[in-house]
View 1 (cartoon, rainbow, N blue to C red):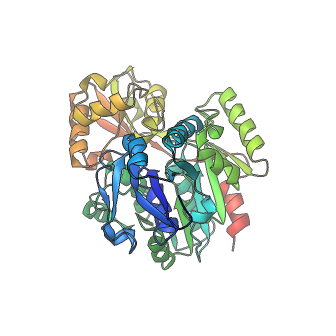
View 2 (view 1 turned 60 degrees about the vertical axis):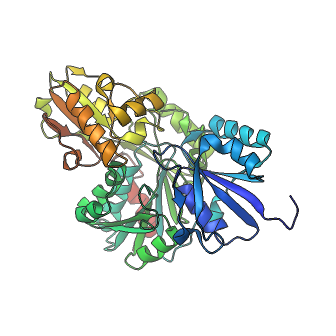
View 3 (view 1 turned 90 degrees about the vertical axis):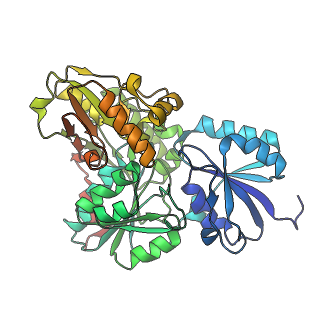
Length: 444
């Protein structure tokens, strides 16, 4: 490499942070030459193209997206100088193993400076992030929305969600959702609906997409305050005026062992220790000690996630199938979630293992993520997988289906047996509360 030659770069990602890093740092950067992206975690992303409509004049043909398994070969083939790591919810050991592969292949390995990729807003930003997928970030974001609109009286509160661009990337550059019809027109996946529907049910607008500079400017036009609703354990794309991070005592120690969750923890203004009603005391104490050691100045909010179902008596004594949030079980590495807790709490006779009845892409998911327990992840990356999910549900011989996803799954798949939704909301215990903290920061 000479000083005259642009730095030949690959961005390793998972169809989210990688595109944002490219857009903010590389799209117009003539000192670097991005050869393409690699992809993992998300089905059917590799083999596609980051389109010319988004890649800018330096990349008029767009950029290819390769499987991450080809990374070592790509480094040699394209004489790559640097690999930028741009995805989330992986252990520190995983990151360094990948770095070792890159270094051994002859390239450098880079983690982006988060300040370099955080967009500055003209509106106040409240960021809600986490240290792991499935910590309780979504119900915390909903609580923040309720506080800002209710106790603090902001009428125009808009949310912006971390990207989940699984369709036509150019068409998804800026997406605005204010109704179920908006989601239907966009052919949203189950994972997308899980994040958007709770805001829509509260009468709020939520944005997402690919080009977050354009998304932010459109959101600013109709917002007094913007909530950044993070994905996985990723860092905010917008520079926060107040940064809330959720930790999970069901996975004690993960708050300082996963990337970039530990960075989130160290940057936080407030840390929510969630699920203390269902976690054991040792786990809560471990998390509390780690939070205080990593970020001694952060405010600490203790929270529970109480569970609700419409008819608890209908669960008692029944053989049940539990459907849990997909990412929590897959790269979140949990073997159970709120649905299992609800089944136990409301007296189910047995939680039936759906794995023997799984078909096609659902069976593939179990093979890829063998730590998933005797529950069904709500996988639905497209119509084909939704059909596989429906067939797996209906093949499993149970009396009742417990659906512990944030959405009404019955709107998307036809379930041929009795079913109930498991709902959960953040309930703060003691002081300070999020209301206390947000009033102190944003009170009128």
